[in-house]
Length: 81
Figure 1 (cartoon, rainbow, N blue to C red):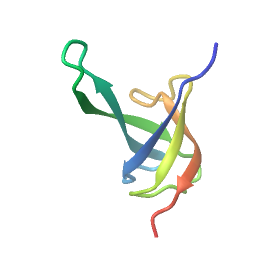
Figure 2 (figure 1 turned 120 degrees about the vertical axis):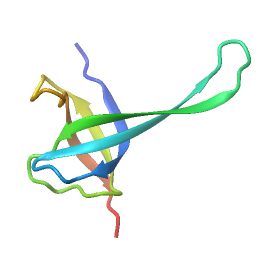
Figure 3 (figure 1 turned 90 degrees about the vertical axis):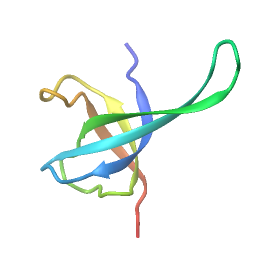
Figure 4 (figure 1 turned 180 degrees about the horizontal axis):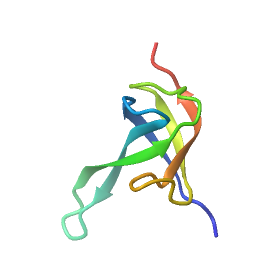
């Protein structure tokens, strides 16, 4: 079964080995075709605590790691300076 991969921005790094990732998607209304932004937050596992607030990261779906964590960070696309 293929795993889901998403691109998002780190919005919280206050937990140890965990990050909150904000993923924004654009969808069109089925009838009116207006494009709207939808956002959702995901909890992701970061083993080395390398990502920080503002970083753009790639997350991948994984087995449940805790009550909320079902994703892990696989790559940091760009780091905030």
